[in-house]
Image (cartoon, rainbow, N blue to C red; front, side, top):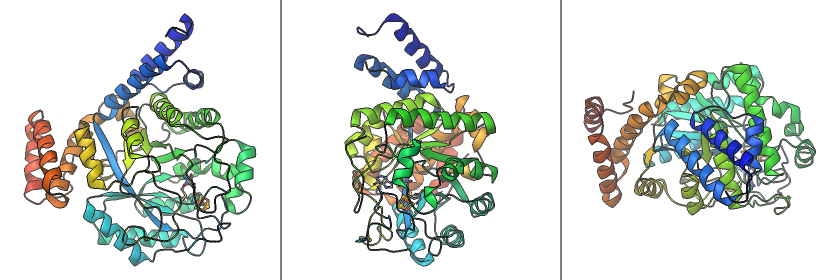
Amino acid sequence: MNNMINSDRTLIKDILDKSLDLQVLNLKEVSALIDLHDREVWEEVYDAAHRVKEKVYGKRVVLFAPLYLSNECMNDCLYCGFRTGNKNAVRKSLTVDEAVQEAEFLSGKGYRRLLLVSSEHSKRTGLDYIEKVADAIYRRTDIRILHANTAPMRVAEFKRLKAAGIGVYQCFQETYHIPSYRYLHQTGTKADYASRLNVMDRAIEAGFADVGMGVLLGLYDWRWEVGALIAHSRRLISKYGFGPHTLSVPRLQPAEGSDVDFDTYRVSDEELKRIVAIYRLALPYAGVVVSTRESADLRDELLSKGASQISAGSRTSPWGYIEKGDTEQFEIGDNRSLEEVIAKLAAMGMVPSLCTACYREGRSGEQFRNLAENEKMKKFCHDNALLSLKEYIEDCCSGDVKEKLEKLLKAEISKSSNGLINKMKLVEQGKRDVHS
Ligand code: SAM
Ligand code: SF4
């Protein structure tokens, strides 16, 4: 802390203590973290972020995969491979049957939670289509919860999306900087900044207690974006009693047909680590999600800086799991399979989780926030994560990885109650979706 004056040191210490007490930070405190340059102090901030994550979520890391439904888009976001301006794109929208086949493929690998991702095309990817896809996946596969990152809707449409069984509605503001937003989204429905900004209010008013937010890092100065995202989250908390269920950290990737200068607002690896830690400390209860846009090594590291959820084994093109797929949205940085990611998490002393219990039990919104902030969440989560891992071991895994995971389970079960041991036996006997 040599090059910091004492008052700054005290301020940072107070901020970290407040986060460790699981309180939401105010904008002055967030700004102090954004402005912090001392590397030595950053090590303390990372340590606090990791401790906050462990206080709320314990050692578990939630795993999921995106299921891309379509790359046919009527918008022209300059950074995206699916934009109308990408004239070389090979376009495809999955049929409902194809979406089920992709979901079946993923459930065979062990996933139980999928994020439906879709471009925006009124004829191909409208709400009727998404309802049919969700209904068919729930009826015909072992997938237990679907989240959606799809085009913003009106309240009445969000009500239907919720009724279709979607758990989290996710939508990224992309950038809060209005001139940049206008430049990057010149045509189509997404050109309306205010409508995008109010999407979470509409989703919440329609009954979504869990919403996922984020900015696309690399479109504008990250310091501005991070402050704005936390300000937006705080506004939702004061209005509804809860804010985002998750904050994602998508970082701009090269994409076919992209027309964005990559370097002007490039976010370095070091800055990304700081952003993850700031999100964790600013909203202690929220999940912080890292996608396969990032490399394997960086993703592993971000887990010790406050990240709590990661996608794994992802493809970003429709039909990308069963075959190679057509035009992908952006390049992927971590090509490891789910099994490889699970093995690595276990080796790092974490508990990989394929659990969906909160959605089965209706723990969402304000209730979720209260449980998380009162440190009650990790008790459910730890046992449920172990039960989901047991299912994975029984159904999807073999050889060396199976052996390692069995060892991990044995060690964790030895510290647990009889209740958990009995539930494990039920899974061994073939019962599925056992949770508390
Ligand atoms: N079409 C909907 C929308 O734009 O909100 C949802 C799906 S879109 C495929 C999901 C997100 O991908 C976008 O919100 C954007 O942040 C992100 N994205 C687009 N192009 C990207 C790129 N080149 N690199 C990284 N992420 C990108
Ligand atoms: Fe379409 Fe979404 Fe890509 Fe924009 S970000 S071009 S809306 S898929």
